[in-house]
Length: 343
Image 1 (tube, rainbow, N blue to C red):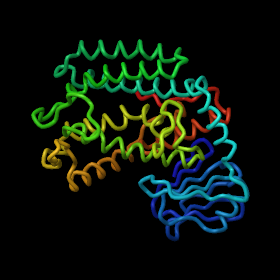
Image 2 (image 1 turned 120 degrees about the vertical axis):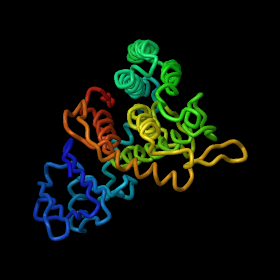
Image 3 (image 1 turned 30 degrees about the vertical axis):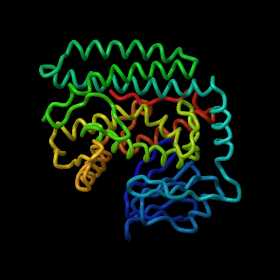
Image 4 (image 1 turned 90 degrees about the vertical axis):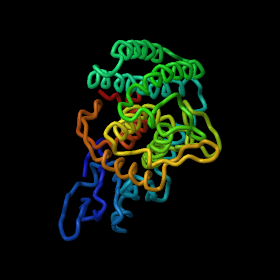
């Protein structure tokens, strides 16, 4: 369990939430694992199969406390609602801002600033950890150029120009991706991003992990009451979770890319975990997908200090914390959206 931003995260999959007077009680079997006054909470997020009592659901609906149900892996299931939809004002604000290019750019540039900062962090960490095996000068130069782009992003007022800066940063960053693969370069290499379909093992891994992280981002946005289909940088397209893709941008380098590089360099994944299709597409085998998913769940349990909250959180909760911060910004509780900046 973790209490952040007046929100209770219950991450134990066998935990059951019940109401005792004016308190939320978290039980594991016959043991009381925690007790929290309901009036101090804005939301309760249950990553549990056990669920919650009807009394607690009714109380939360009447009190305007979000009670959200997710699977232990973070897939959004449902949210309790009272007589009125508690998040209608938040979503109306989201829609108005998304329709205004100037306001959209104001939010979007923070996503891109976070992405470039985290990409720079990945390059700097690789240079520090493996400087003797890498072109340290080349990595340092790419990091310097990314820093210059970050300054330009903060001043940008056009979405099209912002996308141009993001593309330039991605080109710089991915130009060093192959150098960070330190094992079995014959089978694992990166010559450029290929998506539909992925044409090598590295791109197959990146696409699969991006899909998992994107799903977590969509669930997180649903959880706080935002519409994951209406974005600020990514514009509306039928069936596309545009806001989840916005949130994914800042988390992609530090959560997904570093995870994929660790899988390869620590030899958790091998060439046997892939299959090549007749059209040249490279896909993970069923066993390969299981390996990646197992390592991904393990990675999500590791903890770090959140740079904005200054509190310890699990990596797996980052999309949910950032979604909460975004909702607070849209409600004008914060002056700006604080992107996650990994160090």
